[in-house]
Length: 247
Image (cartoon, rainbow, N blue to C red; front, side):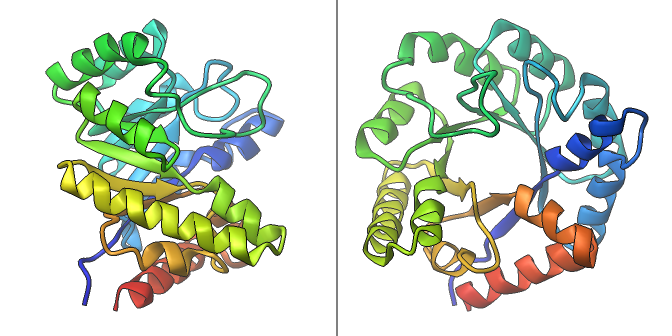
């Protein structure tokens, strides 16, 4: 049996629904509490520049509501660095961010942005925050993560998810093999590999079966399923599929 695989639940889109009408319902803090109650291993929240879902005030409330570690997704900006240092989440995952995008469209160019990322990574690390980079599963990006000294990378699984939706089985298999190879290389480099983006009940099993992966971060799909079955049932089902893949 492979090592247990952690499930981090991204609660951004609970806040997206709240913000569509204003007010405070549905409350992402309640979502965090449900995730904690049903065996989730962490809470992920992306504080975007335009505050389209999670807001500044949500962070402290989420941290106070549960004992689960908070993984703060953030752009590599001075504003977000200051917020991270003020709130001291368990982890900070640096992601690419474009205001016009609907969701994160790809991995961070850690190789091309080394000089921008380095001081931010060092300040986060020096303040006891576990730093992760959200990157494509490519050797060049993984080597850049190693040069920056981050303990964690999260591989973008969007291309894998898109291949499945397109019915392109060969491309889907290539993506699985690429993520598996880079996960193995990350371990050899002393970096803990995570993965996420576009994962669903239908496509999570091959990714969850990669033995080197330590954590999956899943959000939009679970919040969507929660509309029909409730968040508790949605998280439990994803947890079951992940555990079955590791058995």
